[in-house]
Amino acid sequence: MIRNTNTQRAILDLAESFMQDKGFNGFSYAHIAAELGVKNAAIHYHFPTKEVLGCAVIKRYRDRFQLWINNARVKDLSPQEKLDWFFSIYTNTRADNGKVCLAGSLEIDFNSIPTSLREQTEALTSELLTWLQATLSEGRDAGVFHFNGDPVSKAALILSSLQGALQMARALGTGKYYAVVEQHKQDLLA
Amino acid sequence: MIRNTNTQRAILDLAESFMQDKGFNGFSYAHIAAELGVKNAAIHYHFPTKEVLGCAVIKRYRDRFQLWINNARVKDLSPQEKLDWFFSIYTNTRADNGKVCLAGSLEIDFNSIPTSLREQTEALTSELLTWLQATLSEGRDAGVFHFNGDPVSKAALILSSLQGALQMARALGTGKYYAVVEQHKQDLLA
DNA sequence: GTCTATAGGGGGATAGAC
DNA sequence: GTCTATCCCCCTATAGAC
Image (tube, rainbow over all chains, first blue to last red; front, top):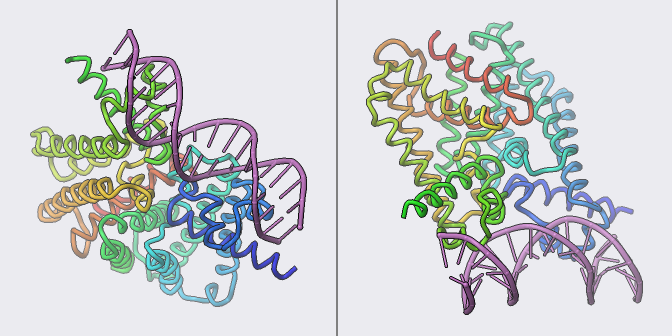
């Protein structure tokens, strides 16, 4: 019973890692099996199809984000601290062997993934955007963030930029990513 | 002789289109052959390996950008007009069946493409960044753009955001992309 | 739950005829 | 320059033994 849970979790961990490293179409059951020290077919026992596995990865990622933002440790932070926390998600992603944002990775493969994964991708991106927009609003109302226009647009700008910066860092190095984060802070706090 | 040129060009056009649609690992020689009405092997005659084909696509893309920015029609524009022209590249990309930035697409697949393609990707991204940074500097010196910090960082922020916005638009629709572009203009011109 | 074995498809690439 | 035919590899997925 416990093994079941552990194996499933290990598979999800590896799949998530591969998706952020090589994209949904860039890894196979064999890759996971090799890392786990089992055979191809064993993975199919836990996740019958790759589509099911991919959906489970994104769903878990979404649930984790919701848990975080509803937890007092994030919920009770100041707007600036919330923003720093959000940036730290991406910074940690970058630090973890140059991984990229899960949403961005899926959006690149968007035209070659099953419909159910597209729906999950859409939901994930929406949820990130919603939280960021609310945080920007809160910060502007509190007088700590300064920007013109709709918080919805500014949130889309920041999220798209973090997504893109993780990708750009692969070609041009980590420095580019950090430069973008610092520039966002300057833009918001100036 | 002329047919040779035309066929090669048609192959490059299709490969470029597929790369922006499905990524380098998301299309095959068979896809190109089918669109072109020839057989698999015919493509290999013009481009012996997929690596060679991919490099040629990026190289042509880079050369095209250099031609554009060195042409008087772009070179003699005002900073605002230059920026609008740059945005229009991405807007047209989005309008063309929801394609994404070639650089972003390659950066996602970065860990599963040949070294020669990585080098081309790096060069492409650098060149885009260099031009954008110079344009931002020029605009700030002229008093029309307003932003704090290093133009290099601001350029990375804008480029990464355009890249990400094209991807985000796949999940959430074209409106998100346009919102990001408008927000950039507000941020720069305010 | 995991194994062996295998089916069935698609991919990149090559040889040799035309 | 393009064709047919083919090789070999990797992929997703399944059947049935243990």
